[in-house]
Length: 151
Image 1 (tube, helix red, strand yellow):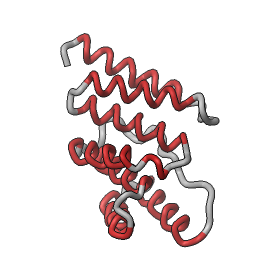
Image 2: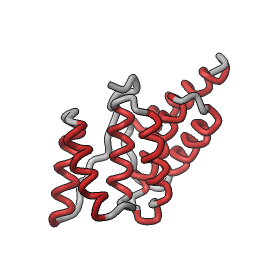
Image 3: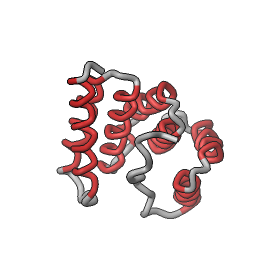
């Protein structure tokens, strides 16, 4: 399990139809820690649409929860390429936040700081939860500390 834990995970809360129900099902699997089942469902979505932003983001998230940082980064980078398909700034902010953690885990601290900066910039574009600014500041402080300590 990731040392960064599951502070928050943005759940799908609007929509209808089969895709919405699948997203809710996958959210529940992730929140329940049933990561392999979630990956199986997400891979079935990506077989239909390789550029599905939410599936890519969620795959990256699941891999990060399993400490599979290289795989997480690969999915996060693919999600960034598909970000034009995402209209939800909270999901984009979450992507940058999780990417900053993954980059910190692989000791790419400059890129990690850039990612948390991107996440923080998006905070002003949506109604976020109370914990998000504090969590982003906590990650920023952790990156700065690691940089001071030499990685």
